[in-house]
Image 1 (tube, rainbow, N blue to C red):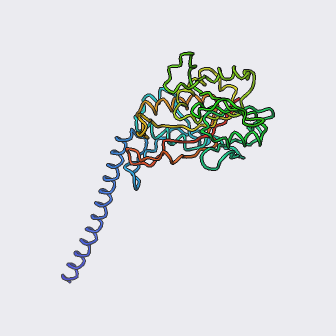
Image 2 (image 1 turned 90 degrees about the horizontal axis):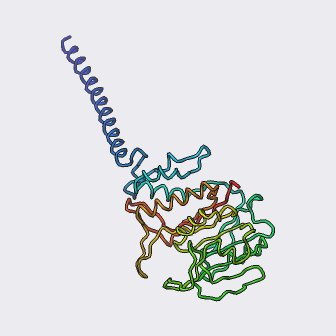
Image 3 (image 1 turned 180 degrees about the vertical axis):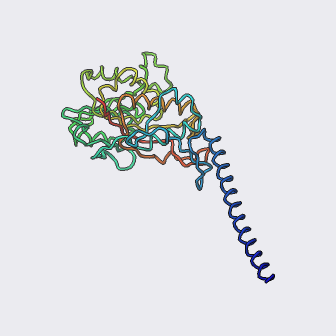
Length: 318
């Protein structure tokens, strides 16, 4: 009888020990995971950082900047000013890599690789009769200019001073100008080292007699000059009469012929986001986006990115 009681006591102690171990494991698990969450919160400023394979951290910086329809948006400048360098970088690359407007029919015009661009073919946004296109940045590739003229019958004006070619008429509808689009006008003395003839968009529009004409498509592939030109286009209200923007955005620096920097500083990202915010306020939304892997790099956080992004925007607010 005594041996039976001892056996029951041992079984009971074993059960108690097993339960105690389970409770201890649960407490330990909650302590560890809570600690991880607090560490990530401290790093991220409560914006949700999760470790991912192949990266140091993955900053989900866009979670708080989502509209009711699920699209990303850029917050006002006061919010941007308060964001860290890492948050600005993450938001920029996330925003330009996602669409904010669903265009039901997208048409690719020009080369399938580099040189082609997208147009929203939806009835409301496609180029209309007597359409006008400004295409800045050619580099001897007229494939987009030729095809948009052929498909929609648009009058196309192509601009690129780097080609060092005199003005000429390429076809019935396509005209080349040895002019560069800038945020200033070069004077008679032209102090630029390359002596390029640079003009603002409004100056060009006046020179060509287009002051009263609507621009259906404005394409800018001007190798970082977009960050100077876009603010001038916004400030001068030039974009008020533009439907489609095709842009290659370059977050790069070329301090010398053989040196390229693909990850710029905080000020560059802040300026880019403020510029994109202004475009957003004008009603422009991304309907197509493409990463140009020619500018591929791995960020300081270990995230694979590209500093050259091709985006197509359409003005949804007229």
